[in-house]
Length: 551
Image (tube, rainbow, N blue to C red; front, side, top):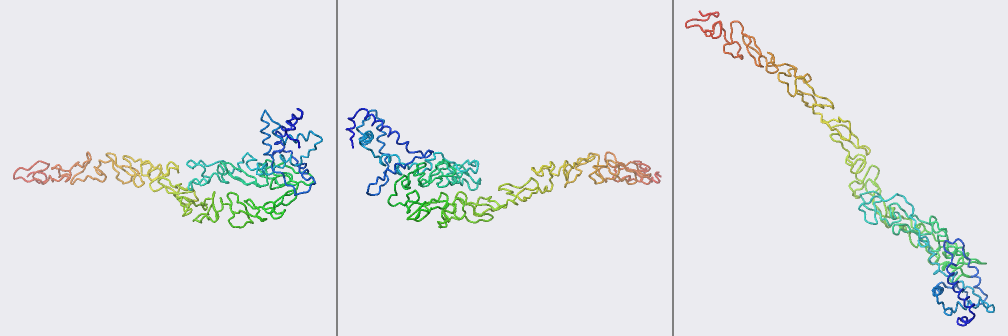
C-alpha cells in the first residue's frame, strides 16, 4: 500500500485529486443513507456480493458501523489547512484508484461505512415512534372539550360532569389525554402513550411508519430485504439477506441466527419468528416477547392488564372501565342500592338505576333518592317540587300542581307563584274575583262569605241577610234604636223620635203625667185626685175626682 507521505510527494494533480475524493466522501457519505421517508430505496446488493471473494476462512460477518470513522473526515473538511498526509488510509485508496497498476478491491470495507452500518447507524429509524413522526397525533376526540373545572388541580378534570365525585379523571391517561374524551387510540405495531397532554406513538421493534400515515400505525416490517433496519433500505442481489438483529444487509446469517426467507432472525428471541420462522407472537392489548423460543406477554398496553392470567387472550381487562378490575386487577367496584357499579378512569363510582340518584353524595348507601317521586329532589337532586300555598306531587320526575291550599286561590292563573291570593278579603271572598259590596253597610269577608261588617248610621240588617246589606231604616216604632227595638206605650200610642221611643198620645182618660215613656200613660185622669181630668190638676181639699171632675 502506498503511504500517505509518498502520495503527498506526487504531482499536485494527484494531491488535488486525493483531496477532492476525501472531501466528496466526507460530504456525500451521509446522503447515501436514504431517509426513512425517501421514496427511492437504496440497494446494497453490490456491497454484499463483494464480501464473498472466494477465499477460505471463517464465515464473514457484517462489517461494523463505520459511520464513526467518517466523523474525522467531516471535521477535517472544515479545516482550511487540510493536511492530506493526516489521512493515510483515504489517500491510499485514492492512490490505488489513480494507479491502474494497483488494482483496488474496496469490497464491503469501503461501503460498509455507508450501507452496513448496523443498528447503531439506523437506531434512529428502527424505532420510529415519536422520533420518526415528530408530529404527534391527538387521537380520536370524543368530546368537544373539558367541563369548566374551576377548582380542579392541574392534570385533573371533571370528565363525567358529576360534581359528587369531584375531579375524578387524570388528563395523562389514554382515555383522557390533555382534555376530557381525547383518547389515544391503539395503532397497529405501536405503543401509545400520553405525554405532555398529547398522544404519542412508538413503533414496536422491527416495524416502521414508512408511509408516514399515523392512522395505520407502524405498518411496515423493517426486518425484510425491502426495508432492512429502516424504511427504504433495500437489500438486493442474487440472494438478498437482512440481519434483523442489526438492521443491515449481510451476505450470510451470523452465528446464532437462522435465515427465514430473506431475513436473519434469532428464533430464541424474535417475537415475529419465535421458535420457528412461521411463529408470530401477538397478544391483544399487549406487546409480545419471545423467550427461549416461547411466546410470552412482554408488557400490557397502558390501561390494560392480564387479570385472568391467560396469555391466550392477552391483556383482556381494561383497568379504566372494568368494574371487576378497576384501576388494578382484583379491585372490584361494590354493588350499592338502586345502582350498578361503574369504573371510570380507573376509579369506582356508581351508575344509578333509572329514576334514582345519589343526592346525599354518599356512595355507601348507593342511589338513595327516587327522583321520580321525591318532593325535595324531583327529576334531579335538589330540585324541590313545591308551590306557595298549594299542594304538589312529583310524578315521573315532573312536578305537578295539584291545587290550592284552603283559604288561597291562584287568581293570576300562574302556577309558578302558586296560590298567591288569600280568599278572605272583600276583593276575593271565598273565590277569586268575588267582591263584597253591601247596601247601607261596610262589607266584611268571614269564612269565605261576604258579611256585614257594620251598618251605616240609621240603618240595620234586620232580616239577617248579608246579601241585601242593611236594608232597614231605623227610627220607626218597630225598629227605633235598632232592629227589633219596638216602641210600646201603655194606655197610649207610641212614637220614635231621634231613635228614642216616646209617647205620641195617651188614650182618653189617661195621661203621661210623669213624662216617662217607659211606663206610658200611667195616670188615670178620671179618678186621680192629683191629676183630675188632666195632668197637674189636683182636686181641692175634701173633693174627689170622679169621671175627671172634682166633686
